[in-house]
Image (cartoon, rainbow, N blue to C red; front, side):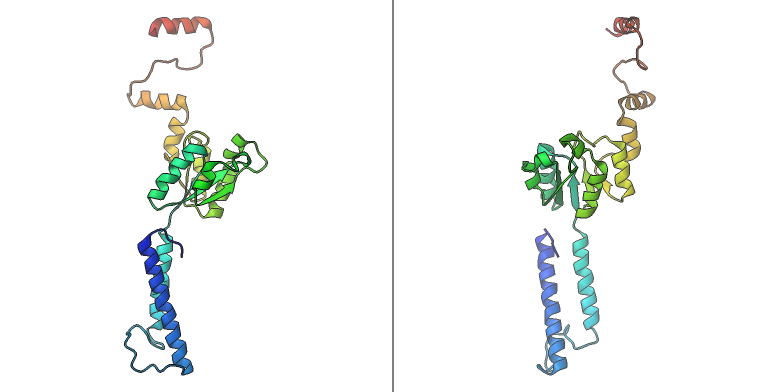
Length: 219
């Protein structure tokens, strides 16, 4: 069992030791190597509550393992490093992805694990490979994906794919991302909500005259 929390690690060691003692006593008692009379440890027995003790111990250890969280950062460079640092402070395991050209990039070595993404693709294309990123997240056992900023951070399809695969997208809900992931939709939503916005045309302008008229109106 791997745990970054010292208390959890100590508990795992203690439980493991208890189980070893239990096995030693039981085997010794059954084979007659050691007598079972006079044992002062109430949790040790040849049968009866042994199974209960082992079941509780295993469940406890599994529970400790389940508490671990792992985040894949779908970004590179300083952006990824800052997220790794925050995760480390929160006892969260980290996963990095890197394009072939970033094989020796610092961010790759700042994470607990690192995987090549977009093999055979150009650097930008590699970091935009949604399906490969999802595959790496599942392979590494990541619970969540943090997109950083840029790349896929405002990509609605990427957030939807994370939801479909049961992976947490560290960012806005898909409903909100659909609204402000597109600047036109974002402005329409702001106007509908009565929020003041910078003046602009309602759509694309077709003539120079429209541009001049807009400039004269708004300066």
